[in-house]
Each structure stands twice: as structure tokens, then as C-alpha cells.
Length: 340
Image 1: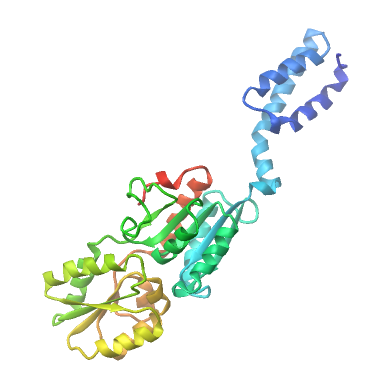
Image 2: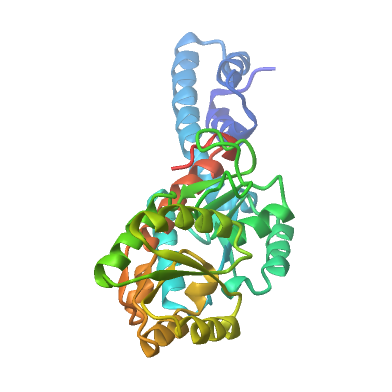
């Protein structure tokens, strides 16, 4: 059956509506159908076919944008588990940078992206909150710190996890290698073992008579042993006795300082740990009260009144995680994403 030429606009409109059902071979198939339906006059057929292909091509280009804006099933979901309090200025700064980088990469919350964030200060309720996030079935998870990454890993081996603030991810059991992570975790390498030599050298420089240094950190941190081994290997080289300072909460911190401060010529090293970050005001205040020189791994301790820090820009690192998440949302596998 042939249609009159006056039906051409209706046919074109119908073809555009069918565009979303077409595959790569659809255009040639449509033109054959179109030829069969048009009147036999060659001039009309050629002109109409050109209009048809031109309009169909325009619809093909516009369709992905329209689909993203209109279809709710295209909204991607990110779950974020933080190891700091929600009202901490550090938390707000890091998440703002993360969101800003995602926006720069083309994602828009409320349009094609949803971010669900949970807060586990010093790891409190981390297991419960991790399960809550996993149950939301996000496309990817962001883990702040080794403690948080370990908790999320126990909850899922299927959902991709991007970590930040993690040292020694191989030793922690998160990945097989830096070049080929091999599982569902990838992310940013924080500190290598050599950083302890720098921290101890700085501590010795500001306190030349230093005889011992305490390593203050949570022993439940998956990379605590890595910190301890690295510090133990470096301390004797500059004639410093290393004293483990395992603490898990505010009461532990107060007790440890009370005992350690009795030893003369002592100082502190505070490596990365969400527990010590959460209680940084207490640690800085106790160090000042007992006149203990200290080198911290994060600038936020100095902002709180600490003596000295040497380390990475935490806000910038959070921004860098957006690139990993962007690639994963676009189809990359965490097993193949090189840890930087």
C-alpha cells in the first residue's frame, strides 16, 4: 500500500519516535521501508528520502540528551561513606571538592546523578552504615580511609569501590597489585613506607634531643602494622626509639598521653587514621599541655593548633577520586583501573 505525499510529515514524526528502538543497521532498513511507502514519482521520492534521513539523523544526535533528561532509569547512584563527622569542616570541604569535580566531568545531581552519603566518625557504626549503603544498590561506592574500605569490602565483592586515604592497599588485602587491582576496589595510594623517614627527620630537626617517638594510631586500622613496621625500620637510623601508641577512642588517647609524657625527650608521630582525625582537637591540646613536639600527617592538625604537618592535600585527593568514579560509571572495571 502506498501513502499520499501529504502523509510525509506524519511518517517522519513517527520515524523519530521509533529512533530509540533502532540499532546500527536501522537507518538503511528504514529507508527501504520509506521507499516502499512513498509515491512512485522519483522526484518526490528522492526529496522525501533526503528529508527523512536528515531529520532522522538529527533525532539520533538529540536522543541521548533527551533520554538522559527524561528517563529516571538513567540516573546513576554513588554511595559515600565518610570516616569523619558530618559537621566537620574537613568533611564539608572534601565533599564539596568531590561534587565539584563530578560536575566538571559532566554529571549533575538531580538530573543524572544521585549521591547518598553516610558518616561514621572514627569508624562508629561503620558496619551498619556500610550495609545500608550497599542495600541501596549504588553503581559505585566511595570509601574514605582504610577502615571504611575494609568495612565496605566485607559487605560487597560486586559493587565497585573507590578508596581514598589508603596506604598499603596490597598489604591490607584490598588489591592484588597497583597496576592491576584485580577485584572490585581501586583508588588513590596515600603514603608509601618512606614517608616515615621524612616525618622522623622533621621531628628530630625541631627537637634535636629527641630520644623516643610515639606512633599514635588505631590498632584496628587495616594498615596499622604497615605504619608500625615502616617506623620501626626507620627510627634506629636516626637514633630514635619508637614507642607504639595504640589508641581506639578519646579515653585511650588521654591515658596514653598521661603515661607517655612522663618519659623525657619524647615526641609524637600521628599517621593517617580517621580515629585520630576525629579527635584531633584533643590530641593537639594534650600535646601542648605536656609539651610534646609532634609531626602530623595532615594539615588539619596544624589548623587545630598542632606544631607541624607534612603530607598530601586531602581536599585535592577527594577531587581526584571523581575521575575514577566517572570512568567506572561510563563502563570501566575497577579491576583494570591503575592505582595512582
